[in-house]
Amino acid sequence: MNTPFCATTLLMTALLSGAGSAIAQVGMTEWRAGALPVTLVYPTEAPTRPQSFGPFSIDVALNAPALNQRQRLIVISHGTGGSAIADHALAATLARAGFVVAQPLHAGDNSQDSSQAGPVAFERRPREVSQVIDAIAKDPVWSTRLDLSKVGVHGMSAGGVTGLSLAGAQWRMLNLIRHCNANAQADESFCFQGAKDGKARAERQASYGRAKYVPEIFLPAELKALHGGSTPTRDQPDPRPDPRVAAVSLAVPLAVIFSPESLARIRIPVGVVSAQRDEVLVPRFHSARVLAHCKTCTLLADLPGAGHFDVLWPWPESTAREVAARQVRGGLPVPGFDPRLREAAHARIAAFHRQHLLP
Image (cartoon, rainbow, N blue to C red; front, side, top):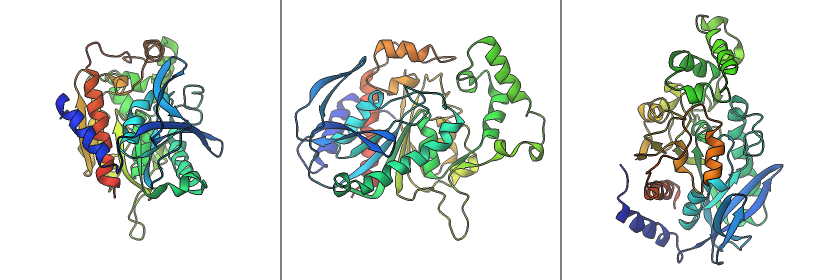
């Protein structure tokens, strides 16, 4: 399913020539949607320069003027403890393909503050994406450059919860508990995220076990509450919470918490990139679940030899080791993974959004 290396350059050339201008440079600026920090990445004619952000280094034109033409918006939802810079390679690919990319720093679940990572952030993230779309629609400058009738969303890892929720799928805590009661060892990095030592792991396992034999009718309402999309009705058949979202792409998504029936109700196109050696979110429980139940979902790339964080770039060794140390299993870059496969996957994501968001 992966694009041959020689075809990657041809595909990117086609993408850029279809953007309606000569090959664009990549601009970047900081912006806010209310209190929410947002990084905007966009096509520009200004020359780029190497820029350092802590251990990260990227080529970008800071605060450069955007191209004077109307474009589509794609919002990227980062993973747990993530940031805009780690997703920059994809954001830059999308910008060169003619999109404006908004990267919100999700509250309480980012590289600076992960105090609300998990279900609290899962429930809030889709609203933050809609907040970004609402705010940019009112911005006196950016609103004139964007056509927001069709918006794309990309979600990586926990950002997959954002993307699937905005596509209309529904999740609940009880799905997580049932999965982890049945698959705690096979999907341990997910089930015991944040519980690495023996005591914390035992407490987490005990919390799952308390619901194991209790009939659902007697379980607390918060475990059974549905989050994400809406339940379709005759008057409101569309399950999307924000109908402006017209296409969603996912990379190594967290997906096991979504019900099969709600995945089957998704009506918009969804593209999936999986990593065959992902130990953080084991593909057969997550990426494969989406593809098995969602009728409008397609596999864009299944990266051989790739681990969970190999879909990100830049990813300095110091950052990779720091993040991997917080994982129960996996997390380090896989030796021998060919970065051209990641570039090809990013090109496929850009092509997917061009297909479904343009004209």
